[in-house]
Image (cartoon, rainbow, N blue to C red):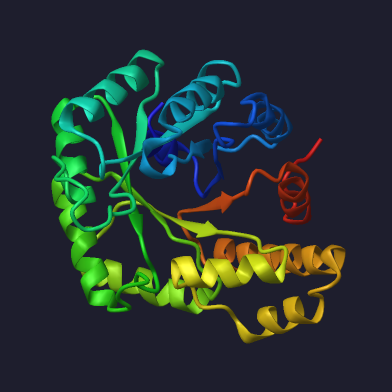
Length: 286
């Protein structure tokens, strides 16, 4: 089933993101995680795409398992940078053959200068191409606090308008920790006429090193109180994990109370912690 159809029937949606293990790790490691996540009954599970396409076959394989064995809708990430039109079409055919109806269309990390010219430069180009194929429900990325290279929200909203015009059906946001920033962003989308579903990305943070890296890569702003607590427990992983779970539970509860379209939980392949978060939110956990 396409995610937009699920959204028409059930809201808010609760979904997870997982990532393929590195090529030198057995793929069964993610299968064990998926088995633990299955009985949490997410509305869909997204599978990320390796940098430079290194894990693309595993993305298809994992998405197929989610869809065809676990009977949960799968959302396969697909990046266009570093791939030719022919490669994109080949991946799309494989996804279609496996019954995958949902794709998250992304630009991907740009190559270093002089490393080749590709058929698709921006996510909107990939979205337009996938829309012409006619087989998929297409998601796209949104950045409530801007991107690492620009914090201009007006520019981000213009990019989203272009993605909608190209054929995007819904958005999943980059992780954000400050809900007021999310609400301001959603208000601006309404004013600009963007009415498709927007699912809010939430990433629980479990240690100080992780939060520093997240800040560097995503540009997400860290609340002072969260950062202070994680710094306090820099040498106590168990306490830092508890802080991260506590914050995620409060953040998600507030988002749901404000009527967001859905929560997309970046699980970091951590099934136990994900189960604890949902349990504390009052979701059925066996």
